[in-house]
Length: 371
Image (cartoon, rainbow, N blue to C red; front, side):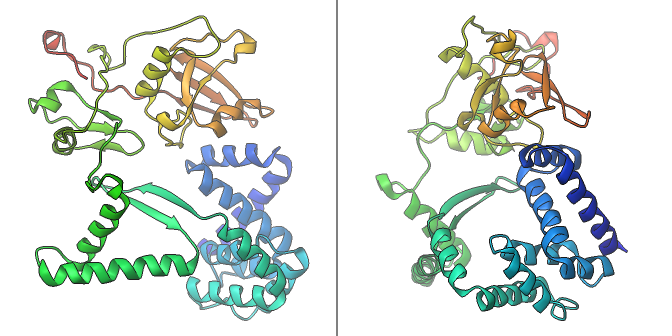
C-alpha cells in the first residue's frame, strides 16, 4: 500500500511540474511544502517526471507494489542523461529484473543495461563526470561531520588503499586507537599538512557567549554551517594559539546583534559583518549554507524602494537570493532579517534568524557582554 501511494505521489508531482512554472520554482515550492532540502526536492521532482514520461514499466512496478520509490530512483538516476530511445530500451529490459531485488542489485542491472544499449554515450558521459570531481561536506550529529570526495574510481581507490596501509602501520605501534581511528586521523593530517601542524587553524566562525567561553556557563555555542556545539568543544578550539576571533556584542534582552545600517545599495563592510554574524546561515527555510559563503541580499528589492539596513537585508545563498525573480514568488520583511515568503500557489512560510542566546533577565545586565 505504501509503494502504491508513492506511485500516486509520483504522478501528482509530475502533473504539478508540468503546470507549476520553471523547474527552479517548482523545486523550491516542493522543498518548502515537504520540508526537505532543495537537493532532495529536485531529485524527487526529477524522479517523478522521469518515471511518468520515460519509464512506464518501472512506474508500473512501483504502482503495482513490486518496488518502492527508492528502488525506482536507481533506474531514473542512471538513465537521466541517456536519450529517450535508450531509456525505453533499458526500461523494457528491466521488466523482469526489478521485483524482489535489493537497490544495489537493481542499480547494477541498470548500469549494465545502459552500457549495453549505449556504449559510446556511456564513454562520453564518463569523461564528463570525471571532470566534475569535487569535495563535499555533510554535517552529522554530536559534533561530527562527513567530508567526502567525488573522484575517479581509480584515484579514490588509491587514496583509500594508501590510508589503509599507513593506518595499519600505526596500529601495529599504537593500540590505543582502532584501525578506523588511525585511518581517519591520517586522512585529516594529510589534508591539514600544508603547515605541518595537522590541526585546524585560521579564522573559524563560532558564536559563543563570553561567559561560556570563560567556563562560567555551559550554554551551547553555534558553529557556522553546522549548528549547536557543546561548551567544552568551543573552549578546546579557542585554546589553539593560532585561532582568531571576532567580537560580536549582543542585546541581552533578545539575544540579537546590535543595529547597523546605511543608505546605499551595497552593504558596507560593517553591516555585512553584522548580517552574516546574525544570520549564520542562508535564511531561506531548509537551506543551511553558511552565511560566510552566501550573499547579502535585499528582502524587498532595492528597485522597489527596499532599504539597505539590518531589517531588510539578510544572508542568502545565490540560488535563494535570485528566487524572488521567479514569477509568483514574493517576500516581505518582518524586521531584523526576518521575512514572510509567498509561493506561486499562495502558500506562505516565515523565516527569521535565531537569536545568538536566550533573552537574559534584567539582573544579568551587569555581566560582561557575550562575544
